[in-house]
Image (cartoon, rainbow, N blue to C red; front, side):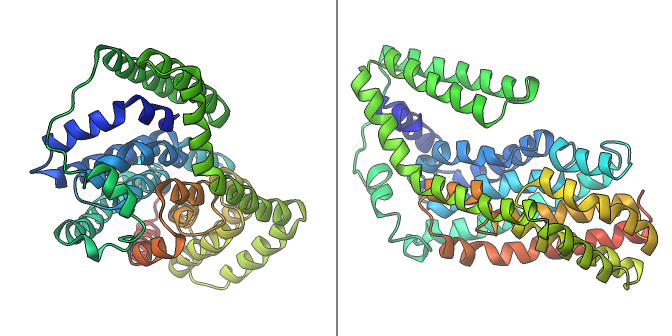
Length: 377
């Protein structure tokens, strides 16, 4: 759908106008976008929306002098922070608390503090890398990979400001209306991948026709978009197969029980940290917040009672252990698809993200220790 929008010329014009508007204060965009994406994810629990965000912000970030990793990091880190902190996230927090016998969304205040701390850490880290790239783009981890994008969005040598035709203006307004419908559907009607995909197909056709594309051009746009995400789609299937084998073969039950028994030997403060690392390990095999909650929390909740860890802390250990690893492990299907869309090789993403993941892990452990010390319940 976004490839069809590119064929209409709308994206290039919007990018040109935003690039001119923020050319002198482009650093403002990074914290604003991260905060917005994190807030949406912490309310509705859909880190997969990064697949939607990346094509939108990628041209803008390149035009402003950054690289593909900055664009991917804004979308992936922003959404996963909101998902992991789970202030009002029904997919991990709500379900895990319900399974654990806790009031749904109880303990909101402490999770909100964690959300603010983690968002601040991510903004500082991404801004530091972004400044380095803007000062000297040869220091970008994806300098060679971004050559074509730089030619397309930055190195055109065009100084004349772009303007929309009347048809493009109507198409742009229609696009905004469709995005309003998307937000309403996700938040108010419980839409997910199937409904979103149907809306995007319809949106691509309608907006393309309004902008003046013929049916052949619209079809070619869709085909080009499909080619760009085909590798990611294959990786999603392979990644999901690992989880299916582990779950349907009942291998996961044995692993969870064995790891839970090991935590039983630890004192309460260390036990909370132990639960975090267990959830971190299990997330490799079950890259699904709801799936991991249903597999682990029926064991971890009563185990927390035995070792003196509050159930609220056990749920937090699940959230933090499950959440941030979604953009670390290659078994996370949406994450690998997002990297494919962004054009960022996995090994280069690891070089960028691993230090930030360590920061997230340290914040998680400190948060769990504090939660246990204050007997958060």
